[in-house]
Length: 328
Ligand SMILES: [Zn+2]
Image (cartoon, rainbow, N blue to C red; front, top):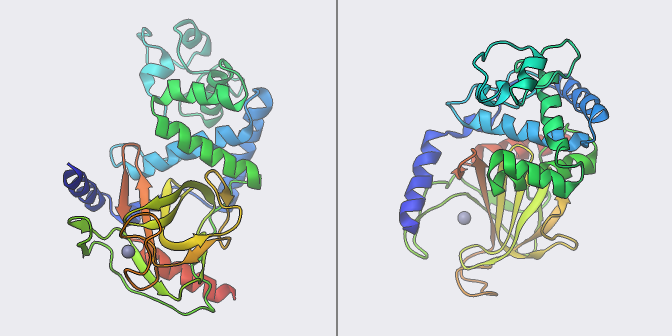
């Protein structure tokens, strides 16, 4: 069963090549400023904090970029509301944007910009409709989580949106696309492209990452903004950390010697922040070390709304190393 899952995940990773991980929409700083203004404006007329609206918007943007069958997010808002929901299940007219009629038909659509229309192609209307929906449950975190559960019917969606919201709230911005290389450049390290190679330990597995060899105790840094989603021991990875960034990427750091102070589940991190130290932990019960040379196993996964699929981190690592070198 486990093997089947791995084969499935591997097949998925072939279907969704890494370049799809990069969003195709306008992600310039000025476009993000416009988005943030819209979140603030919507927050001001609802009771929903802007960072929740922003997190929902970004979550849907990520899913749309990762799923071929969904239209790419081109507009100011990435939220995609199905017609049947927007106009109302019993509404025979799924084209008429008359806000009063939609309201009468129990549709989701609301008029956010005061033009009398509830237009699913208008970002103000879309965000305002989402805010009105959330407001029905209440403005605090627990209320919002319940509303999100009812809307997405997925615990994973609720968790990811809540995590993105926490990152946006912490840094008070959505301009969080900076990255860093996981090993400080002044230390010795070496790595090659080994993603997809076969691994023997614990049955046949595909190597879902890049091994960066470095000395025992070398600091390991977060590569992106995000939250610590996972921390602890696993017999394959030893002492591990998993960080979910705001783009639905999950960054997996394994075989650590230990963790940096203050790193715990739910912590918000930024690129360059030390999260742990290179070790050789794993391949056995808790505490096993030294079964292989010390290295950082770095994996990248992307959530597409159904599953986290592995993709090759090597090109990203090379890019971040290059950027870190230039910034020195
Ligand atoms: Zn590895």
